[in-house]
Image (cartoon, rainbow, N blue to C red; front, side, top):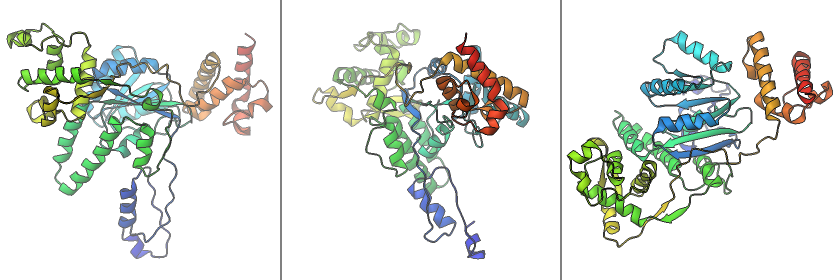
Length: 439
């Protein structure tokens, strides 16, 4: 592509991209051989999307719990086909209207799944990143990342498929420190050292986003050089700021247990010992006789999993992925075990209930009327063989359920309504609204 400017020096050339940090923008200009080009950059901020991060533990159960709280369409991204198949099956067993999508499926099957999702016949797609390019479905209400993306750019593009109608949407990231070690190993195994270094740098930014203790929107926007000084008020950090506590005793329990287990077990086994579980493998190894056995029985598995992740993040523990992810102590752990250093930790976030969080500009409208209008929209869409959001977006339906127009003049005041949609659909929607109000 860089040769085009040489062959056609006087022809205007435009380069377009959805997401690019400063280095990528400079690289685009260099590769296209553009000399001091004019650069137009829109805002990266999507204020209607709420960012949430939860420590990943029993992830399938977490997904099911989250999905049951949501309304409307959603996309769940996994980093492998096998995870897509397993998770889609687990959702189906719970009666959740979903389907799996990845490049291993036959093209005609993928086409059917994609079409059914666009037409609201399937509520939730579980997919690899093979799904999403070219998907223009305005009423996706959430995007959930089952696994950590490899870059902020990928994450931003994938969550950008939510809330395109401007209505509140959710982006949930399940984060596990151990996943980061595996991803770094995959990236480092690439054949091009220069490319590996760039990919590792990009992944470090994604890891920092997941570990953030400050406004996540700030972290995201700052990455794209759209610096923001204020907090967004619409992410988990802003809505429920992390609460610190004196965690030295908890840290000592974990670190001393790792030491007594001879730094040879993974996190779940460690938790089983801490909580005093009388499991066959623990008894056979006589680990039930250790002084650290059951010293953490008053807390849940999820609690200790979160504490372990924090200690990994703080550099007191490392995950040895060459030995089946066993936990090993670092030199930084020594002062804590010797009681010469205190540790402040964050109170673990274990709740998957986001219902009490106030969304950004949550519209005030009649939910019962909205459901009736949504049903009418789907009926019309099926008759016309078009996606429902082509008839009206969720934002338009919410505006109708708020303003309750009963005349053509009032209906024209609805978001997204012009003369064409008034003449095509106005009578049926006004009739439904009137019937609801007069019930």
